[in-house]
Image (cartoon, rainbow, N blue to C red):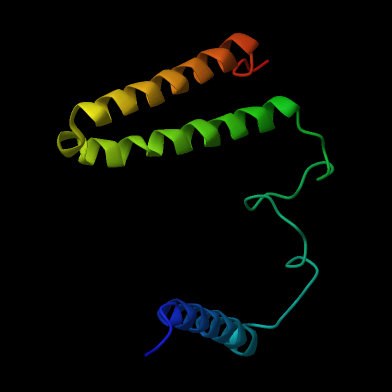
Length: 118
């Protein structure tokens, strides 16, 4: 009998073969007429302006990280909503606790001023 992870291994092998095949085809069939204009970096079709190594304010990263954290937490609401009737009172209490912790975290971040954009 085959190992239980054999299908997963085959999936990875198949994905690797597809990726390598597409890269090889693109390299062999793709156009190869380089010129200085094509090798210039661009920003959405516009010529670049200024240095690419500028510093971003830490607020940008903080808001991005907070968005990811709160967004991932909200994803847990979907399975609960689907199984709401089957979970009964236990599921309601558990989700109430989860939402309470979620709201407390959100209020803490808000009071600390992490969501203020200056």
